[in-house]
Image (cartoon, rainbow, N blue to C red; front, side, top):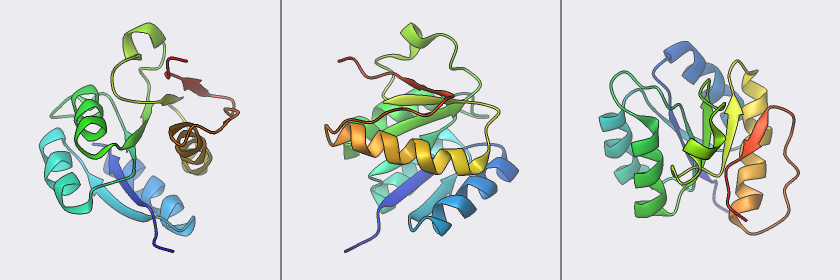
Amino acid sequence: MSKINVLIVEDDIVTAMDVEHELIQAGYNVSVAVSESQAFRIAEKCRPQLAVVDINLNPGDGRVVAKALNRNYDTAVLFATAQCEDVEDLKGAGAMACLAKPYEPEAVVTALRQVRRMSEGRDARLQAGVISLKAW
């Protein structure tokens, strides 16, 4: 069975590296982008099934990235950001759930598994700190 491709889109390189390490340990193929434009270039090559996207990118906007990944590759997206407060604004922004910062890198692994289950139409009980953005 082939590994699942995950794209991390995070402009804080330390956070990106910590999350990358945890996802690799969990058995995923991981690519990292630090900007909106880099995310598009990398996604074209790796065609991610899952993505972890920060909303506030410098430069760029994670909502634009999430919508494009979802539309172009049917990627199930998890926002990992400090911008989880306005849930209504984030619904329809391309992500299935939002993990609020600050978070521990290992929390991303669990949240991403839950997003994958949601994308497959299976029940996913969300861990504390994860907010569903999926319209049921």
